[in-house]
Image (cartoon, rainbow, N blue to C red; front, side, top):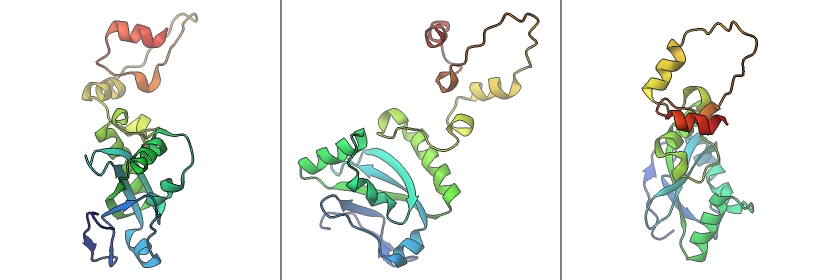
Length: 177
């Protein structure tokens, strides 16, 4: 593991903060797995240390994507690093978590970095209800008055997660047509 950034974890007795893997999928030993419990991890390019994927899981989940044979953008990025003789940098952002804490932290991390800057397909757990929003959106959501529809000839169009309070009338029109 030459060139890997390392730091020792006194709770689990192993090196877990950052690993470089690709050719040899490295796995944590059982004692380490017990110590790190659920965790949130990121994948980065080793030269830029720019994160391109955020995940969560337990055990050896953070290294399982190396065996992924799908056509996903994440896998293509890992393969590109490998072709260029670079080892993927895996960083544990937090460990020793419960499953619900890991799910929440994964979603927060994805929201903070921005889905457009990552290869993740979704924003994570509870994204529709508690995810990243503008303050105005929450005001609209929780202070909205009930609508009384007096005519039964009404069409309601939902644009779901695409909506935010900063959209122009033109943007609202384009999303709803």
